[in-house]
Image (cartoon, rainbow, N blue to C red):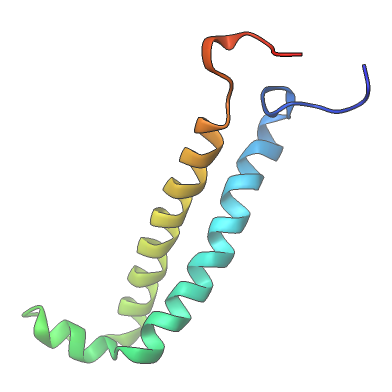
Length: 89
């Protein structure tokens, strides 16, 4: 062995962290960029909700962005796996 590990040999916690941490960072940046241009109160009024809750909109937006970027990162990891389960040398 040359010391390199494939995606399948990586510990589970490391695989989870390699998907969750980047998606968390990108979700934070996406939330900041989105709410820099759009006011949550105006978005809530347009959707028919008359609540004035900016913090709830920020929180919901962050988790929506995090879910989206998590799905994207997880799919990328999934599609990097070799087809057929065989190892190519």
